Image (cartoon, rainbow, N blue to C red):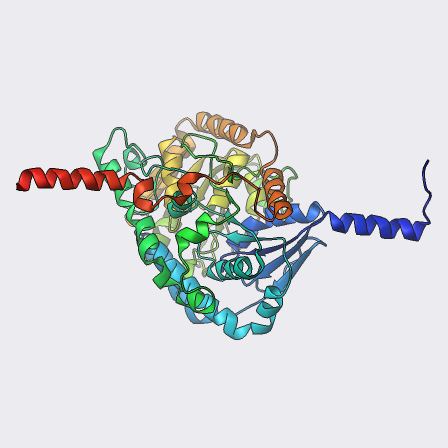
Length: 510
């Protein structure tokens, strides 16, 4: 027997039923140029599409963004960029990440946390007083997000998940008990890649193994001294805050780094790699730009884009000279150059200079022959999905990891920002375009096919597990591993090494 309900009652019933099955999530990302929030948008828009309510704490956009009817943006601009960001971005061109870079990154984001509380106290208070079923936290340099998640967990038992928009820190994997060996993957610290043989070859190169072991100083530095970098977080939250505890207590972890080809990447009951997100609907290219790249006498298109954090106005002159000198010589190609500084007065007609270009759409166009990138994760994801051959020039952060991995697997050629010259850049580009380009193209297309071949879309899988965390309040979202409770030294087997070292010392000294 069916009961007929009046239309208004039925609508009310459906809305109440729908709301009872939806969750409320808070999302907070690292304060940067918008790259991290853009990466996170895939997952929080997917959660919104599934009927959940999403609150995004946005400090990066120049103005509030619209994502979806179920996504509410809490816009919290600060004076951080005006005071500090320009000096920070200068390091992109002139320095290389060392084992202490992560510590300083968290220290910088801790300064941002202090300004956020000082300049946006009412909005932050409203966020803290709101009920959330789970918090989605950017895993690196998002000190304000970590503070909010830690605060809500301690006072309201709100679970949180970590979402790595780049390569996740080794300290996270160690703290979560994922048992990742330091020799199992390329690293961020260490010398800039010059020789392809040095990309990643621990089985063949003692030098490579030593550099990989050197990288262990990074998680050790953050493990023992990380709390000193986040003094505002400790003052506003828990004085006993430790990164290792925060990572270990996360209900789940996700990472957008490459996890399906070549380099081992543990997938456990509380961790998923969610990197393969290929756009299925082709975005459009403005008519004027489309006419430029489809010029009938062109041999193809070269895309040059080094990411939103690479401000060309701060680039060393030798790098500008190398780029302009090399690109001028490819007169039979069309080059789209994303360049936010004042270009030279005599830019040739085969080069189109743009402060911003529709990169995703351009890479999917059949005329594109080559992509010169900074090896940022989103850019590489777009290039791999589109099957475009790559030349990479890593500048900072995890870009060196990405470059080393793709070079080691034979999917890219890398150039060194410190030793770059016009001749080196021209030779690299010319070789890529003229030496068996069709073979490289076929290999790039095959890589994209393997990359995107999943049993379900990555964002769908991530959304499922995030909803599970909300449904179970984080208590039964996954099986916690016993290894997550081991001391750092025990997890890596360093305790046995210390015992053996002590015994050897006793033998030789006695």
